[in-house]
Image 1 (tube, rainbow, N blue to C red):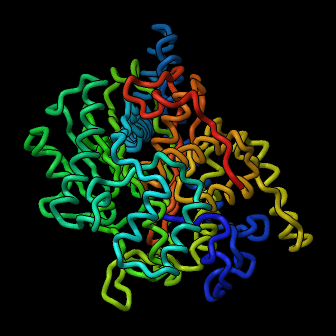
Image 2: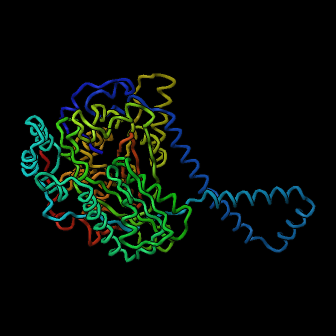
Image 3: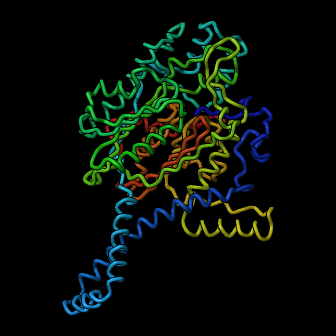
Length: 516
């Protein structure tokens, strides 16, 4: 998902209030303290209660078995005599045991482990510093002076550094925009990430049972997932999926889909590949709202190896705890705020609505309101609940208590869609600069790599040596449609960066000071 950089002219434009609350108007995210929809709080507690009911069956059955094992012969004989003359009791007990066992087997969530992951590191010759970008845009000859100046201002305020990369096709003058060039970019980033993943994990491609690939804007035939199957000669009965058009939050959707597949297919591996393709989606027109993706999107991809094999817990880095997905597509304004279309000259691009930040804020509020009961300490939930009761019974204008999510997570991976969204999330969630450091530095070094950005951020945190056993990581991303998706991971051990970590060659230079 592309977010306009701070102080972008698009953000200053007054917004419609048709479906966005008045408090959301303006350039930033809405004030979460002004309105909280209780239905999403209830939804979060529904997830929690369902989860706890499943967990409670395990200790209950364990206690029952323990008590039974401690019974002597006389006690067992006495119980037999009692039940012998109580047919109804036997029937009821049998039904309870059968139903309880069946419910446990059906609802018991299988643990899903993140064995390892790999982020593609673009080669040096693909770097596109600002001056080179602007020079090539001018030589291209399709942009007028106003568009060239607009792109320069966006880049200066974007938070991108001088080392972000564009595909080889866009380094040519004029850009080589073709299906063949787009395929080359896709193969370069996906195969590069997968080669490193298979190398670092020693997992054979033939062992992969589930493959999920997400790329929003490039969906050729055969699909990207088929390209991977063909390249690595994956087995014929692999469950492969190709997700398109789902924006920058599709990485979390892919993880959620892989999780569901691993709940059904036991003792196997799943690979998730998240990327975006820039070559075929380069916009060559002069509509301002469609030029921003040109300035922020950069080359990147991540490949993630997941497994439900119990033996993999010994070497896995993380365990998946929760995935919470929020979809606001039923609202017309949210549905069209990130929209691929043709401009007046017939040139295709992705248009960003002036309401984007407000809509993202509403989606975020819904997502974290649902996530809160699953992750927040009881003390925070109690304060939040009491403040809601106070507003309901005494003073509706009373500001509700905003839970401190820093008590629930040690690390935050906020999608590096743009400088503005990182700034606003830092303020709205009351985070400190260290909490958003990984997001800012990822945006600076790699740019907006779409759905893979949250993995570059996690790789940054690992390269800094900050992940300890028991640490909780919150990945959160936004996507067209409009969607806000979250994933919560638990570190199973102190995590050291792998040899293919994209930050290892430059981590000593970060964090860098960001210009205002």
